[in-house]
Each structure stands twice: as C-alpha cells, then as structure tokens.
Length: 250
Image 1 (cartoon, rainbow, N blue to C red):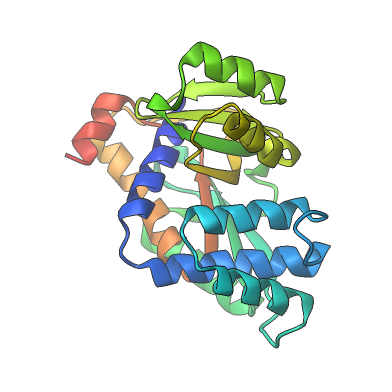
Image 2: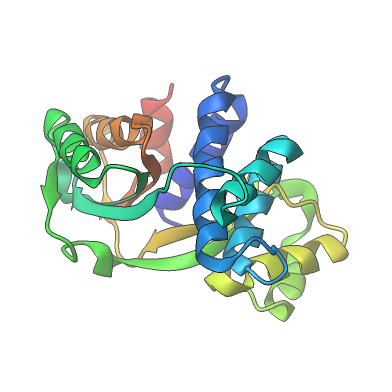
C-alpha cells in the first residue's frame, strides 16, 4: 500500500468535511460537461459520463446541477467550452506530479500552474517527463465494515477488479478504467455499501518521504495546485509512512 493511496483516502475525508461545496460542485460540473461533449449525453452509452455522474451523486451534487451540466456539454444549453490540459512536474524531494485541468484559456492556465510549482519549491517539466510513471485506473472505495476481506475479494475479483487494498478505515478496490462502474454495481448487488468511485492515476513507483519536513514540503505543492480553480485532479508518486503521516496531521 503506497502513501499515495493513503493520501487518496485522506483527500476523501477532507472532501467530506469540506464546507466549500460550491467549488467542488463547479469542478464536477466541468468534468460532466467535458464527458458529455466528448461522448454524448446518454449515460448508458457513455462510460466516462456515467462515472462522472456517479461521482457527482456520491458528492451529493443536486440532480438539477448534474442535468444542466450534461445539457451544456451536449449544446442544449449555452456554456463555456473547456479544454482538457495536463501538466507534469516535480514537487520537492524528486516527487513526480501529474496535474489534470479543464480550462477555457490555455495560456492563462499554463502560466498560473507554472507559477504554483515555482512558488512552492517545485518545477514544471516537459510533457511526457513524468506521465510514464503513472497508470490510469478505476478506484472503488468502501467503508472497512462493509465486508470482510474474503467476501470483498471474492465479489470484486469475480466482477473484474484487479486489486484490493486495506487502507485502515476503508477498502480500496482497483480496476481497469472501463470496469469501475461494473465492479461498483457488483459489490452493491452483493450487499456492500460503496462510498465512492473515481478514475485516477496510480504511480508505478514511489518516493518514500520518511521525515515530516519532507512530507510537508511535498504536500504544500499538492495543496497549492488543488486550490487552483482550473485544476481537477493532482496525482503524485510519494509514499509517506503511517507514523510520519500522523505527525504531519497531528
């Protein structure tokens, strides 16, 4: 289990307690719009849209907001055209960072993302510099008391899941991106409660941050990037031991 996975679960906890739901809903709406524009507004025929809509529902986004986002994506309602742009760089301690944005102004977003890296001790890299260190995956998160390990493994693997990780308070089930919705459905049919699903980038190798000062300097870069309005997701290949992570958030 990598520290990145632990950080993924921490971000879920932070998101659940985050009072700024308006910002979260705005990001989800952009993701839904782009998915609908790329593959159509039918959730049954557009797997990416189906995942984004479910992600919005998991975040308690109102149904009207979801429907308006789909209509803006399909052109039924007027809206801004967003472009998918990714950025690659390094935080401190050689940690690779992969950033996904949705922007209506490529030049502005690029300059601002570069500034965020630089201001916080990181650096922006050329396209392809770090992307090879990540793999696109689907992730299903369940409460730890939702199932025993044996029951979860049997149901998840039968449904096509690739891996299961015990993150303490939660289970994390990893799938191929196209299988995440089907795995969720299978787990729910087996009577298990699912907290959320997502499409993510998981690191193939990790950098261990064995001191609180190292961890804090890396998380400062991650947090600053996530604060940017155009940023949808930030992925990094760090591993923070449990005792160090506890000291950071003590």
